[in-house]
Length: 98
Image (cartoon, rainbow, N blue to C red; front, top):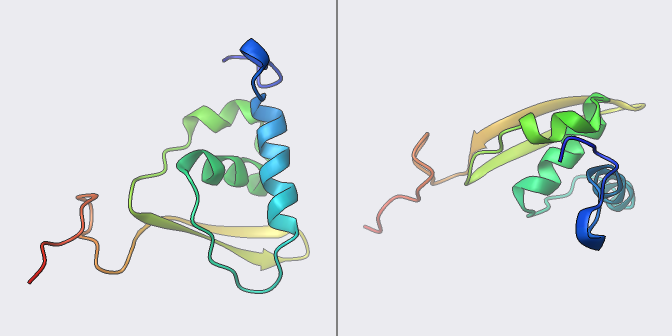
């Protein structure tokens, strides 16, 4: 896993995965909400920050949180780990029904 270009057992490399996620995101227009796995968020963060693919494994995406990408002209701002509405901050659990 140290080599981002490696695709063991015929799988997809981290580099190709990051490229695929960004290509998909670039087809979206305007304000969009996307529900994805943490790996997709990590891939988008790597590309938005211009970080090396090796950083993919160092990005923690907590459960039940949102990541907001905003910006223009190729410059991105990120807000990572914001609790979803109704989620108990920091617990990763939804509140018990009333």
